[in-house]
Image 1 (cartoon, rainbow over the protein chains, first blue to last red):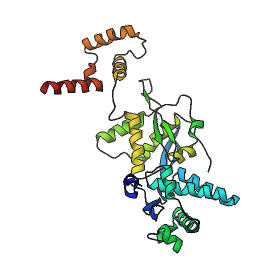
Image 2: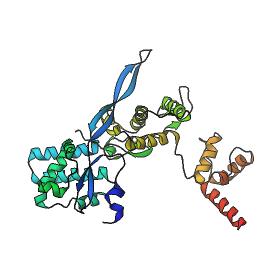
Image 3: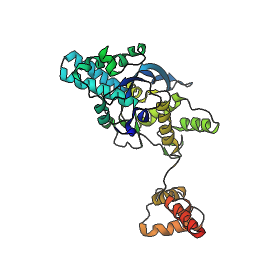
Image 4: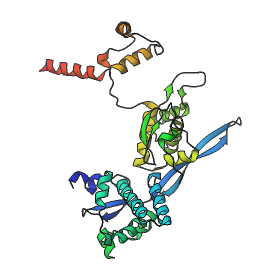
Length: 149
Length: 179
Protein backbone atom coordinates (compact mmCIF):
# COMPACT_ATOMS: atom_id res chain seq x y z
CA UNK A 1 0.00 0.00 0.00
CA UNK A 2 1.46 3.39 -0.94
CA UNK A 3 1.99 6.18 1.55
CA UNK A 4 -1.02 8.10 0.26
CA UNK A 5 -3.21 5.49 1.92
CA UNK A 6 -1.29 5.23 5.17
CA UNK A 7 -3.26 5.61 8.41
CA UNK A 8 -1.71 8.98 9.24
CA UNK A 9 -2.12 10.55 5.82
CA UNK A 10 -5.78 9.54 5.59
CA UNK A 11 -6.84 10.25 9.17
CA UNK A 12 -9.84 12.54 9.36
CA UNK A 13 -9.54 15.48 11.74
CA UNK A 14 -11.85 15.65 14.69
CA UNK A 15 -13.02 12.02 14.62
CA UNK A 16 -12.12 10.03 17.73
CA UNK A 17 -11.09 6.50 16.83
CA UNK A 18 -10.04 3.32 18.55
CA UNK A 19 -6.71 1.96 17.28
CA UNK A 20 -6.67 -1.46 15.66
CA UNK A 21 -4.02 -3.24 13.60
CA UNK A 22 -5.50 -4.38 10.29
CA UNK A 23 -4.48 -6.62 7.39
CA UNK A 24 -1.62 -4.42 6.15
CA UNK A 25 0.00 -4.53 9.60
CA UNK A 26 -0.60 -0.83 10.21
CA UNK A 27 -2.58 0.66 13.03
CA UNK A 28 -5.81 2.15 11.78
CA UNK A 29 -8.74 3.65 13.64
CA UNK A 30 -12.33 2.56 14.11
CA UNK A 31 -14.51 5.61 14.67
CA UNK A 32 -15.90 5.81 18.19
CA UNK A 33 -19.35 7.12 19.12
CA UNK A 34 -19.16 10.84 19.72
CA UNK A 35 -21.36 13.67 20.99
CA UNK A 36 -23.63 14.80 18.16
CA UNK A 37 -25.85 17.84 18.09
CA UNK A 38 -29.32 17.11 16.86
CA UNK A 39 -31.79 19.88 15.98
CA UNK A 40 -35.26 19.88 17.49
CA UNK A 41 -38.02 22.13 16.26
CA UNK A 42 -40.04 23.93 18.91
CA UNK A 43 -43.45 25.22 17.89
CA UNK A 44 -44.19 28.54 19.56
CA UNK A 45 -46.38 31.57 19.00
CA UNK A 46 -45.15 35.12 18.56
CA UNK A 47 -46.42 38.21 20.41
CA UNK A 48 -49.39 38.42 18.06
CA UNK A 49 -50.31 34.79 18.57
CA UNK A 50 -49.09 33.64 15.17
CA UNK A 51 -47.44 30.22 14.93
CA UNK A 52 -43.67 30.34 14.89
CA UNK A 53 -40.84 27.83 14.99
CA UNK A 54 -37.49 27.91 16.67
CA UNK A 55 -34.66 25.40 16.79
CA UNK A 56 -32.72 24.06 19.73
CA UNK A 57 -29.84 21.60 19.69
CA UNK A 58 -29.80 18.44 21.77
CA UNK A 59 -26.52 16.67 22.45
CA UNK A 60 -26.56 12.88 22.07
CA UNK A 61 -23.71 10.39 21.95
CA UNK A 62 -23.66 8.14 18.93
CA UNK A 63 -22.98 7.87 15.24
CA UNK A 64 -24.39 9.68 12.21
CA UNK A 65 -27.36 8.10 10.48
CA UNK A 66 -25.03 6.67 7.82
CA UNK A 67 -23.48 4.35 10.44
CA UNK A 68 -26.57 3.82 12.61
CA UNK A 69 -28.18 2.27 9.55
CA UNK A 70 -25.45 -0.39 9.41
CA UNK A 71 -25.79 -1.06 13.14
CA UNK A 72 -29.53 -1.59 12.65
CA UNK A 73 -28.87 -3.89 9.69
CA UNK A 74 -26.46 -5.96 11.78
CA UNK A 75 -29.01 -6.17 14.58
CA UNK A 76 -31.71 -7.31 12.14
CA UNK A 77 -29.36 -9.86 10.57
CA UNK A 78 -28.57 -11.27 14.02
CA UNK A 79 -32.30 -11.50 14.81
CA UNK A 80 -32.87 -13.43 11.57
CA UNK A 81 -29.92 -15.72 12.31
CA UNK A 82 -28.70 -15.84 8.69
CA UNK A 83 -24.87 -16.10 8.73
CA UNK A 84 -24.43 -14.64 5.22
CA UNK A 85 -26.45 -11.57 6.12
CA UNK A 86 -24.63 -11.28 9.43
CA UNK A 87 -21.23 -11.33 7.68
CA UNK A 88 -22.37 -8.77 5.14
CA UNK A 89 -23.89 -6.46 7.74
CA UNK A 90 -20.84 -6.78 10.00
CA UNK A 91 -18.33 -5.95 7.26
CA UNK A 92 -20.47 -3.06 6.05
CA UNK A 93 -20.39 -1.69 9.58
CA UNK A 94 -16.64 -2.28 10.00
CA UNK A 95 -15.78 -0.60 6.69
CA UNK A 96 -18.04 2.34 7.58
CA UNK A 97 -16.25 2.75 10.93
CA UNK A 98 -12.84 2.74 9.23
CA UNK A 99 -13.99 5.16 6.53
CA UNK A 100 -15.43 7.54 9.10
CA UNK A 101 -11.99 7.72 10.73
CA UNK A 102 -9.97 7.62 7.49
CA UNK A 103 -10.45 9.21 4.09
CA UNK A 104 -10.18 6.02 2.02
CA UNK A 105 -12.49 4.40 -0.51
CA UNK A 106 -14.62 1.33 0.00
CA UNK A 107 -12.19 -0.99 -1.78
CA UNK A 108 -9.26 0.15 0.34
CA UNK A 109 -11.28 -0.34 3.50
CA UNK A 110 -12.39 -3.78 2.37
CA UNK A 111 -8.78 -4.77 1.66
CA UNK A 112 -7.85 -3.82 5.21
CA UNK A 113 -10.47 -6.23 6.52
CA UNK A 114 -9.04 -9.42 5.05
CA UNK A 115 -9.35 -11.44 8.23
CA UNK A 116 -8.60 -15.08 8.91
CA UNK A 117 -11.53 -17.20 10.10
CA UNK A 118 -9.79 -17.86 13.41
CA UNK A 119 -9.36 -14.16 14.09
CA UNK A 120 -12.91 -13.21 13.19
CA UNK A 121 -14.67 -13.78 16.56
CA UNK A 122 -12.21 -11.56 18.43
CA UNK A 123 -12.44 -8.90 15.75
CA UNK A 124 -16.25 -8.99 15.92
CA UNK A 125 -16.02 -8.52 19.70
CA UNK A 126 -13.67 -5.61 19.20
CA UNK A 127 -15.89 -3.86 16.66
CA UNK A 128 -18.98 -4.35 18.82
CA UNK A 129 -17.14 -2.98 21.84
CA UNK A 130 -16.18 0.08 19.79
CA UNK A 131 -19.77 0.62 18.68
CA UNK A 132 -21.12 0.23 22.20
CA UNK A 133 -18.39 2.46 23.64
CA UNK A 134 -17.14 -0.33 25.95
CA UNK A 135 -13.71 -0.37 24.31
CA UNK A 136 -12.59 2.69 26.23
CA UNK A 137 -11.39 0.43 29.03
CA UNK A 138 -8.76 -1.02 26.66
CA UNK A 139 -6.17 1.60 25.78
CA UNK A 140 -4.98 -0.11 22.63
CA UNK A 141 -5.96 -3.44 21.11
CA UNK A 142 -4.74 -4.78 17.80
CA UNK A 143 -6.53 -7.46 15.85
CA UNK A 144 -3.69 -9.87 16.62
CA UNK A 145 -3.73 -9.06 20.31
CA UNK A 146 -7.49 -9.37 20.40
CA UNK A 147 -7.36 -12.79 18.78
CA UNK A 148 -4.71 -13.94 21.26
CA UNK A 149 -6.63 -12.59 24.20
CA UNK B 1 -34.79 3.29 11.62
CA UNK B 2 -37.09 4.61 8.92
CA UNK B 3 -35.42 4.68 5.51
CA UNK B 4 -35.72 7.63 3.18
CA UNK B 5 -33.86 8.47 0.04
CA UNK B 6 -32.79 11.78 -1.47
CA UNK B 7 -34.20 11.16 -4.94
CA UNK B 8 -37.62 10.08 -3.63
CA UNK B 9 -38.08 13.25 -1.58
CA UNK B 10 -36.69 15.75 -4.09
CA UNK B 11 -39.13 18.37 -5.43
CA UNK B 12 -39.21 18.92 -9.18
CA UNK B 13 -38.05 22.50 -8.70
CA UNK B 14 -35.06 21.51 -6.54
CA UNK B 15 -31.76 23.20 -7.32
CA UNK B 16 -28.78 24.48 -5.36
CA UNK B 17 -25.58 23.24 -3.83
CA UNK B 18 -24.71 19.62 -3.13
CA UNK B 19 -23.98 18.89 0.50
CA UNK B 20 -23.21 15.54 2.10
CA UNK B 21 -25.40 15.12 5.16
CA UNK B 22 -25.43 12.74 8.12
CA UNK B 23 -26.94 9.85 6.13
CA UNK B 24 -23.89 9.86 3.81
CA UNK B 25 -25.94 10.94 0.78
CA UNK B 26 -25.61 14.18 -1.12
CA UNK B 27 -28.56 16.57 -0.88
CA UNK B 28 -29.31 19.85 -2.62
CA UNK B 29 -29.25 22.88 -0.36
CA UNK B 30 -31.40 25.54 -2.02
CA UNK B 31 -29.76 28.73 -3.18
CA UNK B 32 -32.14 31.58 -2.32
CA UNK B 33 -33.39 33.95 -5.00
CA UNK B 34 -33.20 37.66 -4.31
CA UNK B 35 -36.18 39.70 -5.47
CA UNK B 36 -37.33 42.79 -3.58
CA UNK B 37 -41.01 42.48 -2.73
CA UNK B 38 -43.59 43.95 -0.39
CA UNK B 39 -42.68 41.66 2.47
CA UNK B 40 -39.03 40.85 1.99
CA UNK B 41 -36.17 39.97 -0.28
CA UNK B 42 -35.47 36.26 -0.47
CA UNK B 43 -37.21 33.07 -1.54
CA UNK B 44 -37.13 30.79 0.38
CA UNK B 45 -37.36 33.40 3.11
CA UNK B 46 -33.97 33.63 4.78
CA UNK B 47 -34.07 37.41 5.33
CA UNK B 48 -33.68 37.18 9.15
CA UNK B 49 -30.79 34.71 8.81
CA UNK B 50 -29.03 36.90 6.22
CA UNK B 51 -29.31 39.94 8.50
CA UNK B 52 -28.14 37.98 11.53
CA UNK B 53 -25.19 36.32 9.79
CA UNK B 54 -24.13 39.54 8.07
CA UNK B 55 -24.09 41.37 11.41
CA UNK B 56 -22.10 38.61 13.07
CA UNK B 57 -19.58 38.42 10.23
CA UNK B 58 -19.11 42.21 10.18
CA UNK B 59 -18.73 42.34 13.96
CA UNK B 60 -16.28 39.42 13.88
CA UNK B 61 -18.48 37.23 16.06
CA UNK B 62 -18.93 33.48 15.79
CA UNK B 63 -22.18 32.38 14.20
CA UNK B 64 -23.99 29.99 16.58
CA UNK B 65 -24.39 26.49 15.19
CA UNK B 66 -28.09 26.51 16.03
CA UNK B 67 -28.60 29.43 13.62
CA UNK B 68 -26.63 27.68 10.88
CA UNK B 69 -28.78 24.56 11.28
CA UNK B 70 -31.97 26.64 11.31
CA UNK B 71 -30.93 28.18 7.98
CA UNK B 72 -29.96 24.77 6.58
CA UNK B 73 -33.41 23.46 7.53
CA UNK B 74 -35.12 26.23 5.54
CA UNK B 75 -32.88 25.64 2.52
CA UNK B 76 -33.43 21.88 2.66
CA UNK B 77 -37.21 22.16 3.03
CA UNK B 78 -37.30 24.36 -0.08
CA UNK B 79 -36.01 21.41 -2.12
CA UNK B 80 -37.43 18.32 -0.37
CA UNK B 81 -40.53 16.86 1.21
CA UNK B 82 -39.22 15.90 4.64
CA UNK B 83 -40.66 15.56 8.12
CA UNK B 84 -39.09 17.39 11.04
CA UNK B 85 -37.65 14.16 12.43
CA UNK B 86 -36.07 13.36 9.06
CA UNK B 87 -34.62 16.86 8.88
CA UNK B 88 -33.19 16.35 12.38
CA UNK B 89 -31.59 13.06 11.29
CA UNK B 90 -29.98 14.71 8.28
CA UNK B 91 -28.74 17.88 9.95
CA UNK B 92 -27.27 16.40 13.13
CA UNK B 93 -23.56 17.13 13.31
CA UNK B 94 -20.55 16.68 15.50
CA UNK B 95 -18.99 19.87 16.82
CA UNK B 96 -15.74 20.76 15.10
CA UNK B 97 -14.84 19.90 11.52
CA UNK B 98 -18.27 18.47 10.63
CA UNK B 99 -20.14 21.51 11.95
CA UNK B 100 -17.68 23.90 10.30
CA UNK B 101 -18.11 22.16 6.94
CA UNK B 102 -21.89 22.53 7.17
CA UNK B 103 -21.54 26.18 8.19
CA UNK B 104 -19.28 26.85 5.20
CA UNK B 105 -21.78 25.41 2.74
CA UNK B 106 -24.76 27.19 4.33
CA UNK B 107 -22.94 30.54 4.21
CA UNK B 108 -21.91 29.88 0.62
CA UNK B 109 -25.52 29.10 -0.28
CA UNK B 110 -26.68 32.36 1.32
CA UNK B 111 -23.91 34.76 0.30
CA UNK B 112 -22.34 33.06 -2.72
CA UNK B 113 -18.86 31.56 -2.91
CA UNK B 114 -15.81 33.53 -1.83
CA UNK B 115 -13.88 32.51 -4.91
CA UNK B 116 -15.75 31.91 -8.14
CA UNK B 117 -14.41 31.52 -11.65
CA UNK B 118 -16.34 34.11 -13.66
CA UNK B 119 -16.88 33.48 -17.35
CA UNK B 120 -18.39 35.37 -20.27
CA UNK B 121 -21.92 34.25 -19.43
CA UNK B 122 -21.50 35.49 -15.85
CA UNK B 123 -20.47 38.90 -17.18
CA UNK B 124 -23.38 39.17 -19.62
CA UNK B 125 -25.87 37.96 -17.02
CA UNK B 126 -24.60 40.32 -14.31
CA UNK B 127 -24.57 43.24 -16.77
CA UNK B 128 -28.16 42.63 -17.84
CA UNK B 129 -29.42 42.03 -14.28
CA UNK B 130 -27.66 45.14 -12.98
CA UNK B 131 -29.47 47.20 -15.60
CA UNK B 132 -32.95 45.84 -15.02
CA UNK B 133 -32.86 43.71 -18.18
CA UNK B 134 -33.34 40.42 -16.36
CA UNK B 135 -36.72 39.75 -17.95
CA UNK B 136 -35.79 40.96 -21.43
CA UNK B 137 -35.16 38.49 -24.24
CA UNK B 138 -32.35 39.84 -26.38
CA UNK B 139 -31.38 38.24 -29.71
CA UNK B 140 -27.73 37.26 -30.04
CA UNK B 141 -27.34 39.64 -32.99
CA UNK B 142 -28.25 42.59 -30.73
CA UNK B 143 -26.42 41.53 -27.59
CA UNK B 144 -23.06 43.10 -28.46
CA UNK B 145 -24.77 46.42 -29.21
CA UNK B 146 -26.56 46.34 -25.84
CA UNK B 147 -23.35 45.50 -24.00
CA UNK B 148 -21.39 48.15 -25.93
CA UNK B 149 -23.90 50.81 -24.89
CA UNK B 150 -23.84 49.62 -21.28
CA UNK B 151 -20.04 49.88 -21.24
CA UNK B 152 -19.95 53.21 -23.08
CA UNK B 153 -22.39 54.70 -20.57
CA UNK B 154 -20.52 53.22 -17.59
CA UNK B 155 -23.45 50.98 -16.67
CA UNK B 156 -21.29 47.87 -16.71
CA UNK B 157 -17.61 47.08 -16.36
CA UNK B 158 -15.53 45.82 -19.26
CA UNK B 159 -14.99 42.05 -19.51
CA UNK B 160 -11.29 42.59 -18.81
CA UNK B 161 -12.25 43.65 -15.27
CA UNK B 162 -14.75 40.85 -14.72
CA UNK B 163 -14.12 37.70 -16.77
CA UNK B 164 -11.28 35.64 -15.32
CA UNK B 165 -9.94 34.56 -18.74
CA UNK B 166 -9.74 38.22 -19.85
CA UNK B 167 -7.99 39.19 -16.64
CA UNK B 168 -5.50 36.35 -17.07
CA UNK B 169 -4.86 37.39 -20.70
CA UNK B 170 -4.30 41.01 -19.62
CA UNK B 171 -1.85 39.89 -16.92
CA UNK B 172 -0.03 37.69 -19.43
CA UNK B 173 0.24 40.59 -21.94
CA UNK B 174 1.55 42.91 -19.22
CA UNK B 175 4.19 40.34 -18.29
CA UNK B 176 5.24 39.88 -21.93
CA UNK B 177 5.67 43.62 -22.34
CA UNK B 178 7.92 43.72 -19.29
CA UNK B 179 10.07 40.89 -20.71
